[in-house]
Image 1 (cartoon, rainbow, N blue to C red):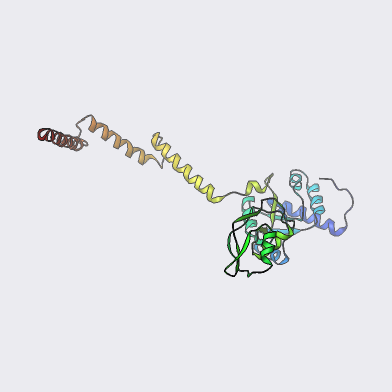
Image 2: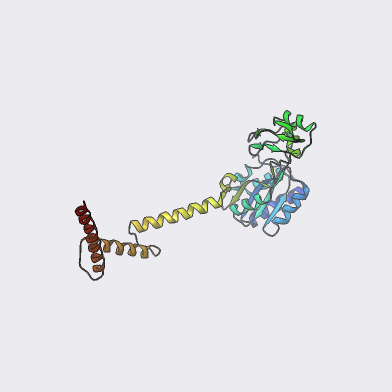
Length: 287
């Protein structure tokens, strides 16, 4: 990032100073990309963030100025400055901020030239279209279509564009008519600076349900290990003692150790063995 030394007009200098002041006031400073967000949605996002975060829109060059003047580790955040950036200031941790920003996103139709965020798949089945030019439009966009029972039907499920590939104007028009909205529009986190470290989206995009299930599994495995290895803890003391008593009783019965706590088990085993022997002898005599 280049260092700017030329004089700034009063208005722009004021914006730079505001950025620097907020960066010192809040625990977290983040860069977000605002490209393609409609004005109405942007106003809704502002309302959703009110009270928990401050969104500041300004020129990238002024953000760059401010980060240069702050210096230190803040320069690492400036490396992620690109596109239509804005700044978010908040006292929340970066994981909470990322989750909140994800909730601001809505699905919108693709524009020609935009890259597919995921594989875009058109499912087979009937549509609401009557026979007409739409059949040719679908076919030209690579979607197999035919007329059945007076309706246009897509004959087979088709992946029309792969993740990361550009969406053609022809395909964008067809997807809009099919009401397929593949684009996530909202504040896209570029990076967040928190407690001396820069967090990128790939680190913050965690599956909470998966993490919780892994923690539950780890707890169960640790519990079983503690019991099986006879490592006493507050949680495993009772099952360890219960297991030890059960095994000691089984050993005493097998070894015919005549103690008051196992005599009933020994007698019960002798009775079962006697009954089994009688059955065996009786069967032999019958034969």
